[in-house]
Structure formats: C-alpha cells, structure tokens
Image 1 (cartoon, rainbow, N blue to C red):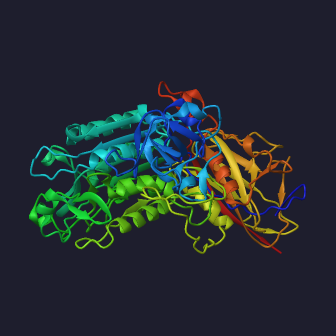
Image 2: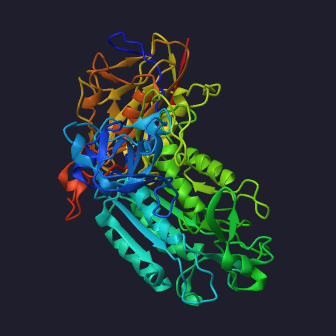
Image 3: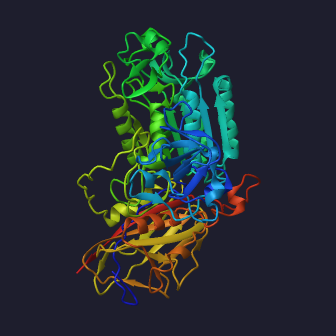
Amino acid sequence: MKFNMKIKVGYLLLGMLAGLGVQSVARAQAATSAPSGQHLTVLRATELRADKLASAAVLTPLAAAAAIRLIGVEGGWAMVSATAPTDKSAAALTGWVRASTVDWQTGASMASGLASGREASGNTALTLGVRSLAPRVNRHALIIGISRYADPATPPLPGARIDKQSATQMAEAMQVPMSNIRYLQDEQATGNSIRQALQELTNKVEDGDRVFIHYSGHGTRYNDPVAGGCVEALLTYDGGQSGMITNREMADMLKTITNKTDKLFVMYDACHSGGLLRNASSVRTRGFGNANDEGLLRPKFASISEECGRPVNVKTRNLVVEAVVKGALPQDIIHVSASRDNEISFDDELKGGLATQYMRDCMLRDAKDLDNSGAITMDEIKQCAQEKINKRMANDVNYKPHNLVLSGNAAFVPAWFSATSATSGTVATGAAVATPAPAPAPVTVAAPVTGAQALRQMLEQADAKRRVQVSVSKSKLKIGQDKLDFSVRSERAGFVYVALAGSDNKSLYLLFPNDKDQDNKIEAGQQLSLPRPKWQVGAEGPPGVNNLLVMVTDAPRDLTPLTDNKAGPFVVSLNDAQGRSKLGALMTTSKMANAQTCATAGKRQKDPLCSDAYGATMVAIEETK
C-alpha cells in the first residue's frame, strides 16, 4: 500500500506500556534529578544492607561522607555500590541504604533523569527518557493489610506490614499520587470499613481513571448455603459474618468502579485453601524456616470450618469471573492472586508476602521484555515473580512453590520504559561479596513481532467499554487500482488516531492526524470518513494483509517528540524496541499528563483532558493483484 505521494507503507512493530511510571522515585527534589551512575556521599554513618529492609543483613558499615555510586531509587531506599572501608582494594559491594542518609546535593548540579533499577540488573529495558513521570490525579489506590486479627486464634501475619510499603511502591510506579492512596491496616480493616472505603473510592473515581487495589492478609473458605457449597473469601480484621468478603461481594462492590475505570488492577496476597496442610494450626503459629532466606514463612489461609478447609466441594469463582457475571469486560480488569485455589501462599515475616515482594521487584526493575516488543506486560511480570518464588522455596522439605494466578487482561502494561542496550556488568542485589560478572549466557533472540501482534498489543491497552466502530468500503483492495476508504464512529466524543501496519512488513505509519490534516476531533455518534480528499492512500502492494488500528482517545496526544521521524506528512515509528516503546507511551498518554491540573489532587476539569483512556478497534485489509 502506498500514499498518494508514492511513499511505501510498511508495518509497525509496536510496543507499549500503559502511561505509568516504571518506578517510584525519592521524594526529595534533589534525588529526582540525580542520575544513575552518579557519585554521591552519605550524610551520616549508616549501613549498606542486602535488601531495602531495616532488618536485612548488613553488608558493610558506611561512615559519614563515605563515597557511594547511585544505581537507583525505590521508595525510601537507594540502591548503591560502595567499597568496604576495611578493604579499599576489594570489589565494590551493591546494596541498599536509606534515601534519607544520602547527600543528594553532591551531584545536584547534574540535571538528568533517574534511571530505574532495571539498568543495574542488566536488563535491556530502561526508563523512558524523562526525568520522572509525574503523579496523576486520575490514579487511585486502596491498600489493605492485616498483620493481626481480633480473634487471637487467627494466626498473625507480620509480613503484611511490609506489604504495605511494597504495595505503595507499586502504586507510585503506576503514578498514583500519595494523596490518592488510602490505607486500611489491621484494626482499620474491618469488613464494614473496607466496604465503606470501596464506596468512597467509587464516589471519588471519575470516568477514565485507573485504580489499583491491594489486599494482604488471610484468605479463607466458608460454607454458603445460598451458593450451595464452600466459597472463597478474604478474612477481614473482625472476622465473623461481617468480616468476610467473598469474590461475589467484591465484584458487586467494584461494579461501578469497573464501569468508570479504563483499567482496574486488583491483587490478593492471600490463599483460599488449606491444601494438604495437615498440621495447619501449628505451622501457622510458628512459621517455618528455609535455607534460602532467614525469614519465617506463614501460610496465608485461616481455616474457619473443617468442611471447607480443603479444596473440595468448592464453588471456585475468581474475581474476574464474578465481575464478568456482573457485566464487566475482562479486558478492563487485571487480577493477580498469590496462589491457585488448591494451594497455600506464604508470608515472610521479614520481607512480606512472597507474591507481593516479588511482583514489586519485577515491576520496578527485574522483569524483562521477553518478546522484545518494547513493552513489559503483566504476564512478563508474573513470569519474573514466579521464578523468584520458585527459587525462594527450592529444596524446602515440606512445601512446593505456590503459583501466581493472573486473570483478566494479561497483556496490560503497568509501566513504561524506553529500551536501550544494556549497561556493562551486572549487579547482584544483596550479594555479600561482589564478584566479576559471569560469562554471558547464549542470547535467545525473540521472534520478530508481527504488525498484527504489535497493533493488537496497543489494542489490549484500550478501554473495552469505549466502543469504536470502523467500516471499510472494501476489505480487499486491488493493487494499482483501489484506494483505502473507511469510516469511524464512536459512542463517545474524542480524538481519532489511525495507525497502519502495512503488507510490506517494514515499519508503522501514523496515518491520521498528519501534516495535511490535523482535524481529528469526533463527536459522539458522528461518522467520520477517512482519508479526506487532501490525503489519499492507494493500494500499491506488495500483496498481503494490512492492519489498521483506529483509536478514539478522550484527550489529545502530544506527538511532537516523534516529528524527527517523518515520511512526507506522516509520522513514522522506528522499527526497534526503543522506538516502539516511545511511540506506545506517547499514544497511550494524554497530552495534559504533566500539566499541574492533572498532576495534583483537587477539583477536576469537567472535560476529560487528564484522561489517558481510549477506545480502539482493529481491521484487516487485504491487497491483491
């Protein structure tokens, strides 16, 4: 297929991540301008620890003014490398210090972006080329953690307090401002308090917003005569009939939120089965140790009745299934459970739930773009976290690893990054002694992402409730004779963007808007015919299938960063992971994303300028001789 000015069209390998930050950054202004690799010092004596945890092993003490090299910042911790004061000739150690102990002023004159820990871990995926992605007023989080229960017979879960910090880092990575994070901890997390918090969240959320809900505590099962058997539930602080929230009730409470949000991400760090845990009460009380870690593990299941304590006669209906029954669309929901319905998940009393701590680490720095699409999806994050769970519980004499369960939209991308070549060397977080990087393993080259796959990945980030219809005059075009002709109709007003992945399999073009035609506004119910007479696209081969992605966004997109890559009046995507990621980030983010009205809480504008939400559809058009 060719444009009327004789420019051949190829197809885009498009990769993306959903308009969210790839990591939490230190709140100090100087910290956010300190680049990875910068040499800093510590303000006062402190310890370099193996993990971002006050109880983690000390790798070496650091005296005041000790030199450190910054690698990344997550929440209130800085990943740094430093040399042990007792042996200046030894290789540098890599670990964590409190961000408050770092003298950020030593390098404040260097204005640059803060790289994420992905660079340190040798991942080829780095942060997008911006200083940091600002918090967004249209992002919300509800973080629920229960480390102790009103009933003293219910085993405590000390790690749930750590999960609060981990879930906060995940929320900040997704650009949720601290003012939009609501916490319910321990006695605050009664059944009725959770119900009230969900109602208040429902009232606060506006059309096109994004919501993250995290629960850490015991799961349970109880007999529900109405359901005709045992049902799965979350156990709240107070227990009893009002202190259990089933998946069905949760779906009921979230129904209005799912109707408003473009994406709802819910994570349960709990389990719903006692499995084959015959000595459950004693194990829950004292935990058990594992040679891979010094923390004690505790099952995150509380047995209420003998008949429902094991996975038999169970009405297994996860949150996504229940939500779909209530009318939600699975593309708009992401649900992560710590384990399968017949497995036990565990709480590490020093580092938090295994599911939460490893999902956090993979989201912030460790997950890899396995298919080289330019995006890291929830499925890739889950795979990364599962590998960590398997390693943590390897060779345990009593228990096998539990398996994370991802339901709903596995292609959802919670964080944007820009892909570049990996930095030299590797970092072993928590290593007591730094060792030379091993010889690199053979590189497995991912199969090329096809145009259809690339566009579909963008399609998966759309809000399925924002329906867009595209009608083509001909689904088969004769080369050298026919021209592309289609119409767009949207249930909502917005802005139309059209991308073409052509039959010659080379690159992607943004057909509309373009330099010849910037009028891409569409009203609700209006039919928009494209291309307009001032720009035409003719079928000029080669024979094959073209894929057309049509998006209708709530708010305009700012594509000026792409203007260096042009083919006549059309924007062109670079055919590499970095180019795909950059284009995807811009196309899925409102032009107003960094405006003050969208970055701070307060009265929202009536028009949806802050919304990243969009509807989309994809059509195939064949070219024939």
